[in-house]
Image 1: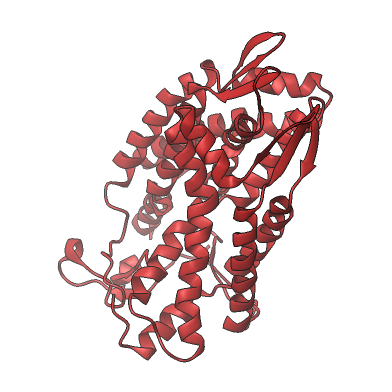
Image 2: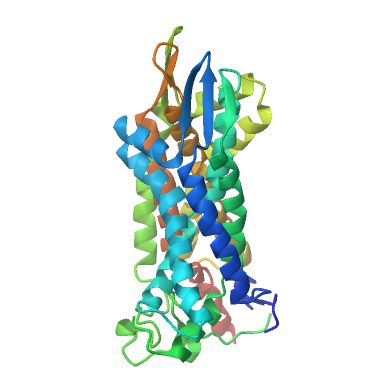
Length: 186
Length: 212
């Protein structure tokens, strides 16, 4: 199949497999960018609020902690799981798989991680969270002056880098490479 | 369309973990993928029962998710509790009608449409319907695609509850409705994952085989 080609089901026309246009180099580049942005997005505040000199700011993990403190631990876990854990683990697992593959090797546990990447992907909700930030800011705009933080810009960039990495991640070829290299433990 | 040969009729099955197609042995129920070791089956086991169980859970949770407040606001001017719907009304009156529409679609239309669509798909599969399989397959894909967008309101509440705590002026805390609402989103996503869309086509293939 040519790069950029798509395999469709003969019966229901669903996309079975889309061969990415670029190879592993491309995916690795996006992943490294995503990893750096992920750290920045989590370290710096997303937004700050200012009412007459009183200031508050929200980081991602800060939001989770605030929910936990209010007795909403389940919601806190949901937020952490979909905005930090799923994308973070996804980036880490893909890097762990692809970096050794780039050197023609495979790291131990690669096969179970390749499975993890596939099962974690529906739970990453970066773009939904981004829309959530916008809605929250609009609701607050009349109440206080809203200052976007470094984390917000990093988060927006992370969203694009992550989507680009995930789109160029070629699971079929990675599985084939893992098998042909061998020695990979399940 | 001509009668098609399917992998299943040729004794082949695809692995859901690594997508490898392999030949099924004599014992169809104890097959494992030769490459990654995951269990391999022609159809997801117990798909209909699991999907129904999760769907009914979601339908029950849908009530507290919409009735209970998802957010409490305390300010100088008194306390106020907001449900999902009143939050949308607030956005509308504040002049952000575009965002009000987005939140209305993501929080009210999408979860309800998902519940109805999945129930319809399950009933049609159980009745072995051969009606419009292509449209039903597309409906399933739409349900899968929109799933996570309902999380929007949970994030909005999380951010507001973090940002707005100015002791004397205004404080926002999350309400119990947010828990129920998050649970609805997660359970409907699991229900959609449990459903096996190939079940839509099985009665169609059988009917074709009988005619041939």
